[in-house]
Image (cartoon, rainbow, N blue to C red; front, side, top):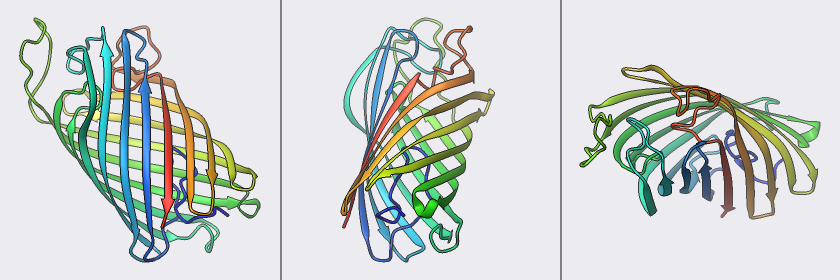
Length: 278
């Protein structure tokens, strides 16, 4: 079994465990997103989160987000209007809750619901000012095999977002930058499998499919990412590192002959999660 309840064995896939009652856990998550196939693109998302176990089945959390971005020689109508070299900037806050219906340790199969309310101030793709309000819901399943040496997790997710861009002056002639409010709906499905090969050490892989629908566009994008993940846990802290590469993608494209969606996504992501229990 994992050393801590709600220990994040994966970078992107959520497990079904919750914190024990009246316990705290702090997270620091860094995600690098890089390479759009043209020009230069590198962004790093920072999420600093505090989680509290209200009961053994119900956990709440709050987080703040920061963003740094460096983009050059990429212009995409309605998405990336100019080069930008931005140092760390506040980009939003999150509030979340997780309820455990079935425990993976006690009920043989784990099942939890996770709900999140998010307020954003910066477009994570372009670094431009953009106000968003999002509500997300994830159904997280988890199962232990071989007395916890092999662990599987699976997610089904939905996210609805209200978004409004701020106006930008001196745009290139003919450049499209809509400022009317938009509604975005995202569906996702993911899975992960990890194996404990030494005390405290797990190695595995995870995969995630996402698709988004927008007000006037219909299905705007879809992408499939997959990659290896490495996890280590001591008695008080844990760390998870995931390499996530886009295998296929579609919808609106930067270049029509691409088989990847690189407007809102990148060719790869790297995520580092650090957790501390107290």
